[in-house]
Image (cartoon, rainbow, N blue to C red; front, side):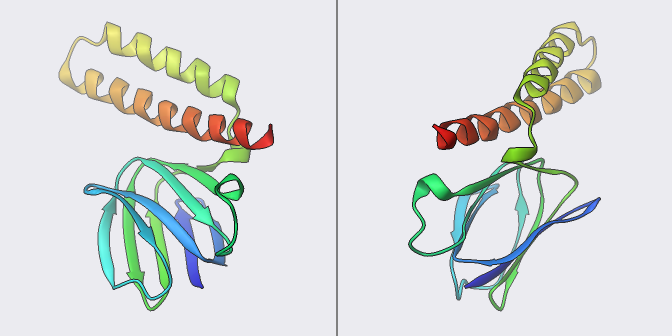
Length: 141
């Protein structure tokens, strides 16, 4: 087992022993299992997947939407430090959809590169949150 800690600016979002964690990095997704080699990496905005036990099915995975941060792996401890992280059950899909549409409007109305980048970041964030919410909805069916 590995100890997985997901830490946000507001405190620890998740902290338990798990079998596997899949993390978004600049080089693509990496799966972390027990006895993974030490690593420090950038976490890109995306989805984190957690498998609690080795025999858990894909349908039982837990998901978190994150906006990127830092990953540290050493001695069977995986720490991910991010500004924000939303568990699938914490995402209100209707609110995320509204925020996504608002970000799309901001993107269209952007007049300079700073507001364009800000709108794109907001849109990407909401897209990830909607993907996580969709996975939760499928899991419940």
